[in-house]
Image 1 (cartoon, one colour):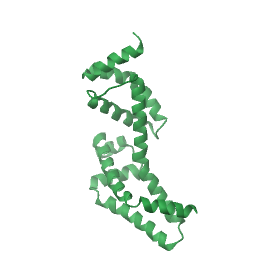
Image 2: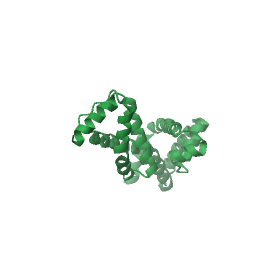
Image 3: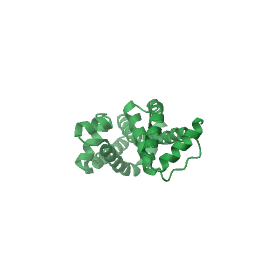
Image 4: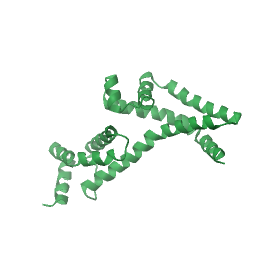
Length: 193
């Protein structure tokens, strides 16, 4: 039996809820996926988190999954999508904050400086409106650069709770940023010229 047939059989056994098949898929693919992801994200911890989320998703959606390629190809393609989403979710806020800070330092026009300060105040306002635990988790992640696992250990909470709270925090901040993206684009072009 070749690897493709074996993977197909394993996948169909997994689809029916077979725990052993799921364990075998994890055993076969987790390490190569982690190795691949660790070259694409900032840390091994982030890579492991992405793989854990991928396998949780697989288990939860197993009955609905239809794979038209090899299982290996599907897993790596799904991982690539997760890596892109990870960057989109986690780096956007940091990039905005960094960009805003650089603009505030570089702006000499007092009117623009006031606008940038208002923007910073809006972000701080969004942070102040977060529940205390969400704000604390956000600050540990974004200001102290702790990993999800480190925050979970520090606060004696599950890693999934930390991830959920970070998602909530980023969602709140994105709502504030949505209204000012046009302003950022305007400033970018103004400063570039």
